[in-house]
Image 1: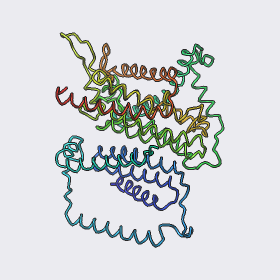
Image 2 (image 1 turned 30 degrees about the vertical axis):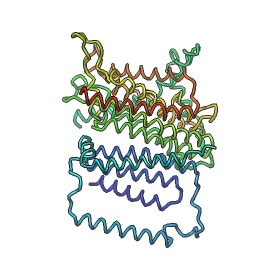
Image 3 (image 1 turned 180 degrees about the horizontal axis):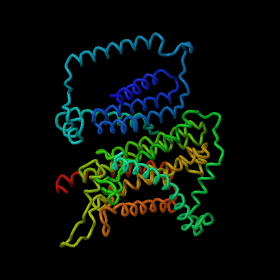
Length: 167
Length: 345
């Protein structure tokens, strides 16, 4: 239980700091820290496979790309026409957006808790690799294939965008 | 303090100590082999046959001045070598290097020669390997020098590109062994194939996955930034790449991380493809000797490559990774999966 609170605190604090401070490189790093803490939570849930996948995909692959882009653009600090003394999160626009997001989150949490503690996935399917693979290719085959199609489309889109026009 | 717990603690200390030492030993081997190949003598003054040369190197590094560029990002500049070294050490924690042992009857139950027995061990090695990119990238960025930044960018691009092939090569073995646990994978390779009752070949996965082994080794060399793929530190173009601005012990940490990563890649290759601690003539409990021999052979291969092949050009490296290695990896996985499905290996 202690490890849960430690990891949860790290995850929440790191996520808050991602948006609270202004250097994009630090934001990326704090997001990685947050992912790491989430991965620890998966381990506590007895799902080591999901935990490792979280590290490999999110912390290892996607965030490296983020860091790569931030470094390539070399965005120093955010440029803004607003008053720099007011923290960006305390301006009117972000505040309103945050309130809406928070309301949606609370509503979803309420709905989820009201629906009962039964999770959508059977308990065995998060603990073993075989079970995850099986349910991916049987029960969730359609969702799985549609997702892969989506990724393929995104990839083709990136190639089209990046391709130089032949002269 | 039960004997088993003491055994575990001793094992952790032993692995840590050996990894530290392996970096020192590899420095010596590298210099000696390089000298052999270039018809020189190599280090021979410090100690018998120059064996104490690594010690002299370490003392020299310790007494160097610690420098930090004024424009560097203080926090990340300090953090980068720590990340690099931590990842290098952490990855070995899940690598098994011998069968269960009782240390000649000292402890009641058998203790597996593996610091942490996890059933997704191979994925953890892969995950920590992908985290070690950050050490190099952050070192490059936080130094605030153009050579470091270019080195860091190159290395992140290179490691992302070769990680895919590396993972696909692993996947082939996982399909054949039908397990993610390194111990299970090694145990699936015990014994040998027989022809008319005569053992002809050990049951190593390198014979089932020759292409996978080649892809693994190639991608492994690229992942550890060794020649001929040592772009992050191409000295003719980038001074020293991502660690240009580092000196003294912080430089030593990057240096050490590189060698420890090599040892880890070799140890994983031994477990996955070369039968781990299984081998003829020796009893199971002395299997770690076989393991050491195999790892040493792969490490020698690494050094041999470095002093034989010239560095690729950057665009050649990218083309090779994406257009040749990756399709080969996919092909290998497809053929393996089909083979397992139809012949039920």
